[in-house]
Length: 415
Image (tube, helix red, strand yellow):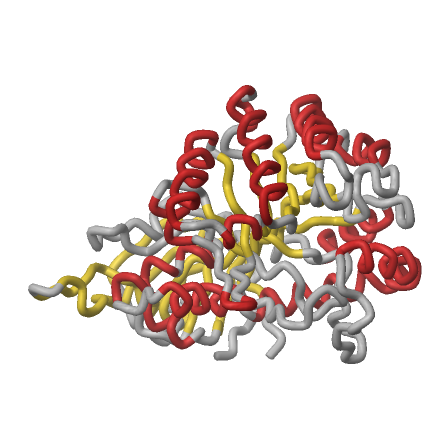
């Protein structure tokens, strides 16, 4: 679908022929379909200002031509600062098997990558936008090789995309807090007002001391009023001990509750069902969330259904998009939702529609009873218009995004 972007740069406009979900169709077995209808949606000053009956004759309105309106997608774990996207194809090297191997490799190549990281970050953002994403939680390297230059370049890229893409930033000691003596740099990064989270990396296997690394990170977050998002690849007893130690700290420090996360948390994938239930209860009590890219290697999958059942906040992101850590990231949050649905057998109309929440950070057009809850007057106008009849189809078929709106601004997509 072609939209005249020059005509619609104004802050006040209306969309007509917008397909919105209005309820579930049920029989004795439960939800069998989703009911939709066409509406007009008025956008004013970056927000939805009115949803009203469709008027096909409305002059000067943008014709959505029956496309389904969904909340724009949010990638909650990605590294915009160090992608190979935009460079010639490069698969993973068989020489680099461990996190320590990758740290050594990064120390070698980061000075070269920084020369073009602004342009490549913008290209990666373009890719995310083409798939309907307008927001990301992005980690940036804080390390002794690059200092804070990764942040500087990332901020330039984000500033160049201002108005069509936004992000929250995580200061991430990719080379360890103590493995490469990055603690002082992390203190510097944590004081910056535009940094929302402080991170960490495998306190046991990389930093060599779970308590020392977690204690430092927790105090850094408290002192600077930041959240926490720790990368944890460690499996086995040490991985679980790390999670439980972070839970203990969070219970003792209520301001950290609801803004503390463990990314990856692969140790959870190796637990028995009983053990997974137990630690899910602890995570829920402490309001510690899990952020996952939904891995499924070697027949091991994360216990996402168990976490969700116990009320643990589960966020999803692409993590690596065609970089030197992984070549499988697509940038497509609908693909992540589709993968979740397939892995866990969420394949009914109702289950598929609920799975959309992993692409949108929890926002759904219908509540569990089928009542309309989005879009409502006052909602941010972060909108993806997709070629689908309903949310369930969009997830199942990974439907194409034809129009993207970020805070009311129509985003030129690069097809």
